[in-house]
Length: 81
Image: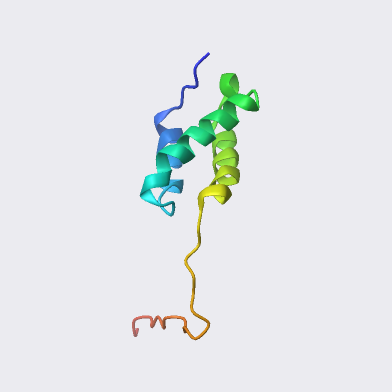
C-alpha cells in the first residue's frame, strides 16, 4: 500500500525541511517515506510517527553552519517598557 500523508503531516515535513539545503529536500522527503515504510508504519502513520522519523532522518541531511571561533553572538535588545 503506498504511503499516504495528511495535509498536516506534509506541512510538518515541509516545515522541518527549512534548514535543509534546497537541493537535498526531495532526497530527504524520499528518505522519510522509505523509513516510514521500512518500519511498517505505512498503514498506521500519524503525526507523531512522522515527526519522530523526520527528525531522525533530518540528522543525516543537516549541515550546520560553521561558526568562526572569533565570532560573537548577536546582541538582541528588548523594547523599553
